[in-house]
Image (cartoon, chains in turn red, orange):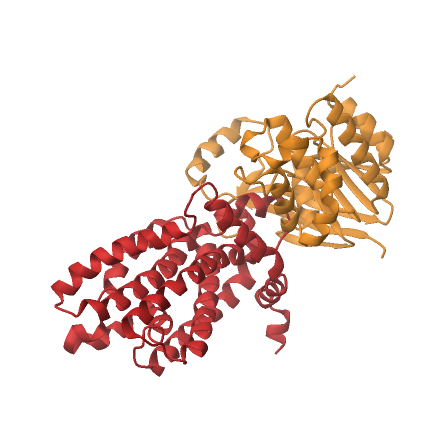
Amino acid sequence: MNFFKNNLAVKDFIFSIKNYYSWSYLSYFDLKLKYRRTFLGPWWVVLGIAISATAMCFLWSTIFSLDWKSYLTYLFSGFIIWMWISQQIIDAPEVFSDAAQYIKAYPNNPLFYVFRHCFSSFLLFLHHIPLIILISLFVNHKIDLIVLFSLPLGLLIVFINSILFSSNIGMLAARYRDIDPLIKSLMPPMLLLTPVLWKPEMLGAYSSYVYINPFTYFVGILRNDLIGLDFDIYIWIGALVITIFQLLFFLILYSKKNKRIVFWV
Amino acid sequence: MKSEIIAKDVYLNFPIYDAQSLSIRNKIRDIGSKVVSRSKEDISGARVIEGLKNINLNLNHGDKLAILGPNGSGKTTLLKLIAGIYFPTSGEVSSRGELSCMLDIGFGFELDATGYENIILSNIIRGHTKNEIDKLLPDIAEFSGLGEFLDMPLRTYSSGMQARLAFSSAIASTPGILLIDEFFSTGDIEFSEKSKTKVLEMMDNSSILVFASHDMDLLQNICNKAILMKNGEIILSGAPKEVINFYKDTYHLR
């Protein structure tokens, strides 16, 4: 118990959560600023997704010879969720270097900037969820009540993971500058390797291989109930196991090296 | 609450991650030169620069410390160490009392946000709540003297106006321990006079002041203690008058 009480990572994490007011205000403001002077604002993101998803839906439903209606919800939800998750991964290496100006000028817990960044993406994703629900209602004519429980839980798990991942990779990448280009070159093929555009059962005998891919779990816990797929306890367990690993890595790395961040950025 | 700053045997090394290739060249250069090199290799073989060496400080409630020294002698580094931005490589630093730093005051500004929004943003990062800032906003706005420009994006400001905004947003906090790096050259004559008066007032109200500056007369008027730094070390500490005279003699300033 003493380890947790005196651990700097635990202290800073709890302090950041208590201080939610500051970073959430800044996250909201970052979004507001980003879309100031545009007419559609964050709806541009939705429009962008809608255009590419619709085009892909017709193409891929023909190639896979699927019913386009059921494929539409699958593709649309997968795409929107993927946008959030992959953006978090791509931005993670720069989360501390982007805040270098602040870190070097003012004594603040570095996790503050991680929360600010991750919450901003989270808000943007929340903004898109009604769209998934609308399309799901349009195709399925109903939505499972389990969503009321699973969606907030799924959001929480993915949000916590985005914070842990950004902090872990942000620290490593601030020190070792090769990590950033490495991650940026790995993410495009990950879209094809993750069941976003295709369904696991399409792989036939190889379908169990999708569970090697950690993204399968996070896309799954957000998507499955939302679009009326069967509840799958294994993807929830998988997501939790990954969260625990990330948390352990965070506790060790952050408590040992957080004072070095200012020299790395 | 009584304020206090204590530093004990503090060493601070800056790691340098991209200068490995220079080391042989530097060693050859160092053979012929009498300059004491501040870069060396630490235990693990990584290249570091000695930012601070053997720093001992003990400041109590009511102390006003002047930091003197040429450029690159470690004045700002020492201030940032006390502030808690840098952490010592070895030794200990502790402080009691609420800190307010005026080191790099222009952080937290967004070019597309208006003057008012930037005041709010930079003060939220400093840990104030929106309600607190809303109460201070009229005073800050008036002090800045920017008038209707506060409703316009920062992009449209001249550098002098940006400096006015940066200074005005930084003075919102009521200081306990006040850390100030030289910056009186902000804005035009009128504003720099005004900001000087304001800073002097803040210094008066502070429980402990640590002030790095090259303005000898000002330092002598305000401070009751002084240190002279060179190559990251405190080479002299004592009464301001004594230290300033030594500094002037060493660098032939009179």
